[in-house]
Length: 323
Ligand code: LMR
Image (tube, rainbow, N blue to C red; front, side, top):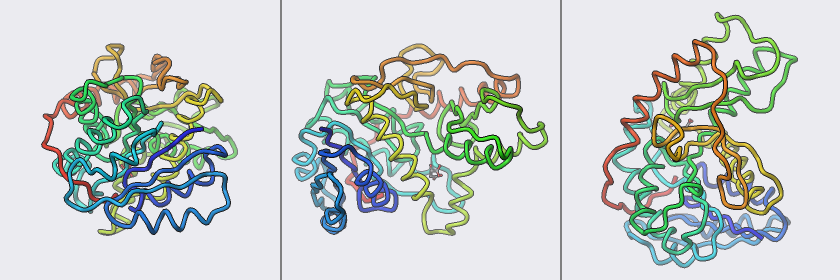
């Protein structure tokens, strides 16, 4: 059975994500929890839930690089879900987090990649458009990079797009809106035209598109200094990790939208595209599919931004803090 490791498990996203995984991972799985503060408590708490999932943990220490406790826990892990890092505050963009979070991701991926080089890495930590590229650099440095096993979690954009369009066109209901591009502002490109059924008029649809692009900021503002989306992000992260598990275990070959190495199939090195998951991580990268002229315009605006921010230089590894 699978071993899924939440890195940053005691933070705002991490705790909810761990709970959702505890309830939904296949019977017999292991949930491994790492954080620099609070991991033993979260592990003790979760381990009282009568699911068929075994809980393991490692307590890190603030300021320790290449943490030996994480290196030990990371052995035998199949899927890492990395949520550790600092969230934004009102007035900040996701990109403003690069300086601190990129170093954290680099350090964590170096540690986890050395212990379980064949694992699938799911990166939630912002700015996803850049941290996925940083994770790729770390895995390349270790000589274990596999472009089919590194996935940026941009699914929250799809979850939001789905919610907002379903609210607007009741009783029509869809399960998953395609969202491509990246995971920040103008790089988020929802493709509502790919949905079955009639769409609302442009005067209604355009504000929904905009809302999907700035939805993260909507939450940051509403939390007024107490972080960014944790609950909806945990929901998206858990759904995503469970799809990865379905693929790895051969239970299904789910289609997901994820920010990945495009393997030369798109104009940018990294991009959120539809992929089919399976026993090896990504089995197939699919074409983005049809777009309206408005969607094409948004997509063309997103590409240069993604090109620029996914090419940022490797920072120095930084010790972890919980997410
Ligand atoms: C989100 O989309 O809510 C997350 O990426 C967090 C953020 O800073 O917006």
